[in-house]
Length: 319
Image (cartoon, rainbow, N blue to C red):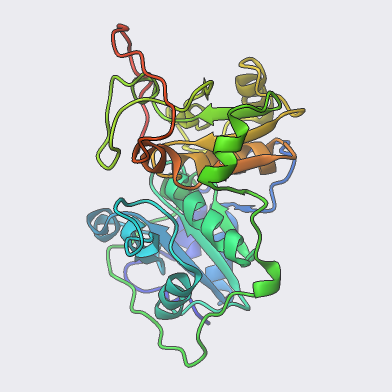
């Protein structure tokens, strides 16, 4: 098997008394979600898959799901071809990373993080972009694991040496959910396209400038809906119910009859929103602007909006 579970993992008998039944939510498509209880069973049955926590190393070392490997953003960004960070890694860099992790292109990759799966879904976005669709995220992430009554581990997982390199299936590569800068420029004059800014309110208005961007502001005519409003951060870190999610978007005019291009700072949070709209709610035409505000802000020829004089209270979110 590819996954290696080691350390102080409790037995299923020790955990069973604290296990919680996951709520049943009526999403349009939940095929990319997996419950912690199912992953636990897969581990105990020695199923063949790769388990990955997307987090900073110190967070991973403090505790992680038994058997999980660790990666962080710099490992799947293209920092070679741009003057700024955040763009998705090339296919070749991704294949090298996945080979190092011991992943197989024939088997499933299960991913989670500590932030409502925002980083996990950025990684999923890249995998699906290059043609690997055998991927799921643990609903609730690390919180979902502990909420199900399972223990965490502190022992780093040893990488498994493999002789067959990971290779994406080029016939399955897709840009169906990928938006380039040129596509966003064309959308500025298209009334059938909604540009959806999913950052914090302070970022949207220009009151806050994050590292990496050349200037503060937003794309012209964009609508603001903070991505974090889709997650139950008060308790479970799981996605909110479908009806609540639908109301969140439809109440702001983000409806299924429109083409939607989501963006954030570097395409991380907007990958999460793209997943929520496309998979959980069934929107048919949603894309994630890969370069997002960072790429846009570095091009002085592109228009932008800013209103820094407003007195605002930003919506709490996790970057």
